[in-house]
Length: 135
Image (tube, rainbow, N blue to C red):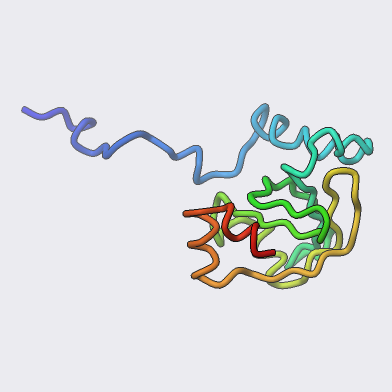
């Protein structure tokens, strides 16, 4: 007879990835925000950025630290990826109202944002250096 528990599972349990972090994991994920607030964001270089945006429903200011896939400090261009796809709050917020500020590598500026076209997404994921070379 099959074990009922084993027959229901398909691969590793990644339920934690689908939910928002709480407790100690939330604190760990928010530590880089505190670095930026203390003007120590330069320690993270251009590999990360702090995105300041307005909530789509509440209108309150929010901050999110994002990993930069393709940094271009000279042109102030950064390509970021949403780990939670279009379900991420920051992604939905900047889709409703443009981002207010970006901080990265000791720089602080008001961004001009755009969402990449599907073919650009594929280029970034498959060969990041080719997109960075053309910009």
